Length: 124
Image (cartoon, rainbow, N blue to C red; front, side):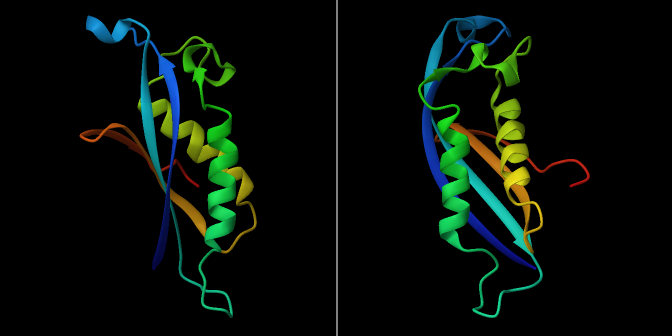
């Protein structure tokens, strides 16, 4: 099994309804790792072209960058947690990869250098 990962970042704010100071509006410079996997390589020896995976990731992160996450439709009525952000990114990139030899395996969202949440999908 081959795995390829790209790392990109975006800045956004959220407010969590979990008690404590995180209930106040605050922001992060989020770092995102997007990993795809597959068994077959192209004739050129690639699982996926890094340029494609980077482009898709940048497109999806553009929907979140410099936004108040709680106000975005995908998070309406929910806390915009890192877990939910990871699922949102995963699903959006999975849609773009439809029919590709590789499949999205995992998205990890880092709120800080020592706090992260990952999503691996359900039945994808």
